[in-house]
Length: 243
Image 1 (tube, helix red, strand yellow):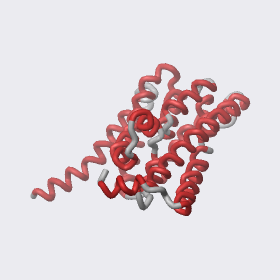
Image 2: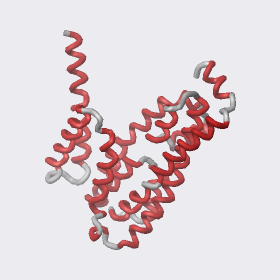
Image 3: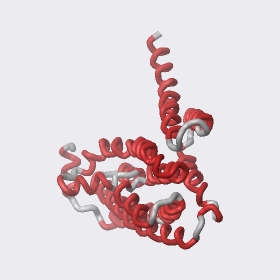
Image 4: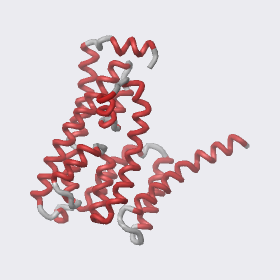
């Protein structure tokens, strides 16, 4: 952290700016946290009990990874657990990259550092880095991260209880809803031709391998194929620059 940033961090944020950041953080927190109800319902539809669904939201706490986990477990049962863990872990790597960017910005230590790591997700990072100064970034990060954590876990419990009350998930189409939910999370990120092309490559690979491989493995292979497709244009650009 620079000297200027240290000085800014030590000064109080003016009331109007603080209210603005709180409104932004809470609006994102409420909108995102409410979506936890779908995860709770999908988790019990995949065969998890209420407390297992709750543990995933409290300990894993990263929406994309959670949906990937229950989607694979739901299609392959306990035998698919290793593949589910691998796929969800790969999706969670992005949070570690966020942490590298936020470490200096937040300036937290010890126990607060552990808490910050747990609530470093897409939304808390986005709100933090979109602010004009360090003080607002820190307020935005904590308001967004903590509000999502509380609401996501509360709504997971509600969704799990509602899902149990519904009975057989196949009657309501919940057995296929994990895939739909994950697609909804992915769709806003397809903003370029390259992103769409990579998604198509991964989808084709996963669909081609699904009949032959155990549940979960096609997702991992598709992720590897997507990584290769993402790296290929970059290598071409580098080689073209050298020629």
